Image (cartoon, rainbow, N blue to C red; front, side, top):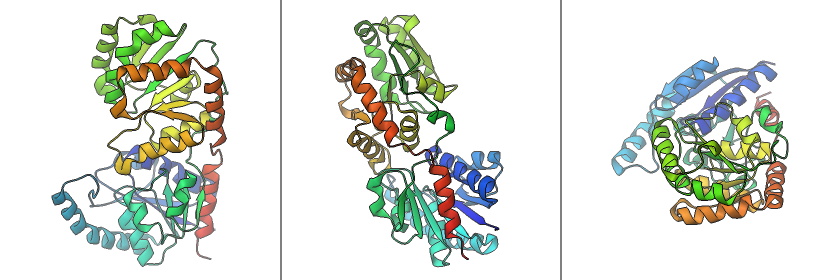
Length: 359
């Protein structure tokens, strides 16, 4: 059975990384021919060609969290983006269009709906982004990560997010008996975590015997974060500062607790690993989706939540002391996280796409 699929969207790693995983699954497991459509502003311009998939670009900008002038310009570009996508659809003639969110997803999905091409929306966050909100009621089907998201789409199914197998292979408890706190700020780092954690590092290490801290701060913030840790007077043998994690799965496996943002991919990886987290959502995330992701994990008993605006050194210190001092609670949170993981996400999403192919 021949199958052609157009993957639409991108922008951030949270969109393009799972999109590439889905594309590989469709190509390798179902023999599909896969193309991408994105914009010149997103990570897809580098990551899609590196992965070996063709990429077409359209011009469309932002509508959320931008000035009125930018919104007006984007609204003017949108019809041209839809026309451009319609041309790509007529040329490539895909059997299914998969929208993963991001700038290019809206025009491509709208063009697919107009041309009656079957569509699958992939939504990793608890609250959909603007593109998926616009088309959610009209798509052929949807694959979502949270039960709370089902209501936004037609024919939606909770599939989870594709996560690499090494995260699912992580054992329930860290290999060492000593406690370890892993602070993750993502590839760009998290300024709030970089600023506050060093202020409490010495007191935290004194209060929790045997505790060690690994702090991933982002390449731009290494010097400042290292300087802040050094100024704290914390025992240098008990903490390490890194620009990024050489092996994220290994670092997570060795951690008793994660202090991190709550992007959808991070949440999915921690669920796959069965690790508890104290989430500090990025307050400027579109539609406040990181807070809603974290709230869903709190409701599942898999995490705790601390809003950045209230994250004073004192508040964070007491939160971490309470969590690190209760191994039973950490274990229960980790088990709850594992319980909402989706090891078959890729296979299920691939089958959903295949099922939409016109007979």
